[in-house]
Length: 229
Image 1: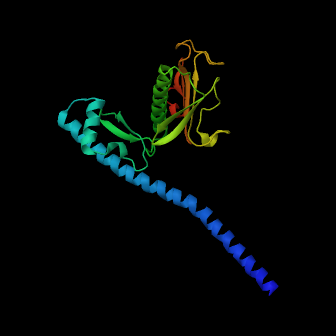
Image 2: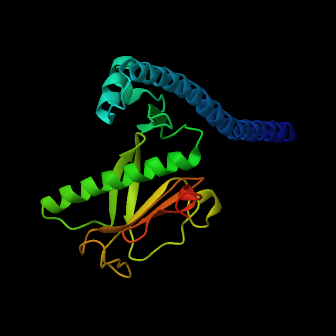
Image 3: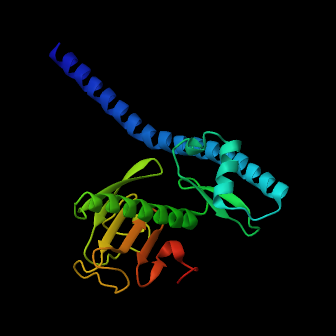
């Protein structure tokens, strides 16, 4: 009876281990499936938006403005802020024909473009937050939280340049999406192009690319490879 009880316990333990392994194997597969499903839905929504913007452009035969494009997009897709099922930020940029096209900050196939747009937006949001903090009498904090692509992102303050010019997947010490900022005259950060205490250095990186901004050098990094470098 004792041996039989031991065998039963061993079988139960093995079954639990097998179940855990199956769950661990299934989680990555589910995430891949979820991403693909969201990307497909996002692409369909982007196509509808793109078609609407093209129709508007052809009917007016002029260049228009970002505001005009946004109004047209609001008419084509009233739920524009939620156009991407995963909450990706929708950017409007002009193509080679001068027509505004929507670009998703999470799913667009041009990963370098996606990184550049997200980096510019992140820096803009950071600047807005710092202005609010200073108006309330506070100093620039060690970390500022912003929301980008419907996700929280911490912009960490640094006092010297980082060795981060490529995606986090190929750079040791970093993981996922990260952002860093530095102020003029703080530590080793000095450009002579902005006032002391203003943003003079900013880095945004996702798994694939990085965008680096310096007040005296503009945008560089792997996301700008072939453009500014």
